[in-house]
Amino acid sequence: MWTYVFSSLGAALTTFLMYLFYLPSPAELHFKGTLFGLLSGISGSLGVLFFLLALSNGGKASIIVPFTALYPVVSIVLGLLLFKETISLTQGIGVILALMSVFLLSL
Image 1 (cartoon, helix red, strand yellow):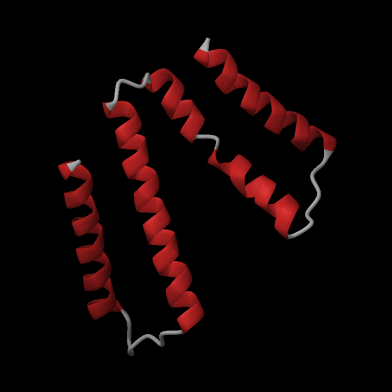
Image 2 (cartoon, helix red, strand yellow):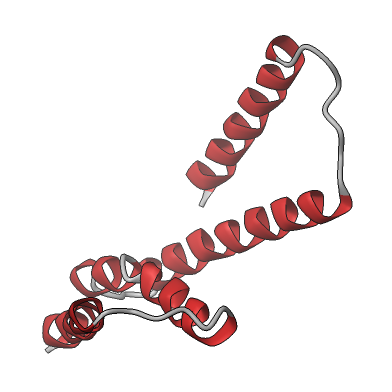
């Protein structure tokens, strides 16, 4: 857990220093962009914390790691539901096979 805390602090420090030394003028802040940036950081941090909790509570890495690698499936489903996107037959088969792979690994 502490490794993640110090990793996050290091990333924040690096980002702050990049802002100070490499941006020629102050960046404009927009509410929508700031909100999405904060929500992205919060959800990413929660994802890492839940991942670490799953591993520390005796979960098998051989199941947890492939399962978490399926996060693009969430984006695909959200794209289908929210943006009315379509996927090809080949892409749909790929999603189904990816989901089946986690099931097979858990046996």
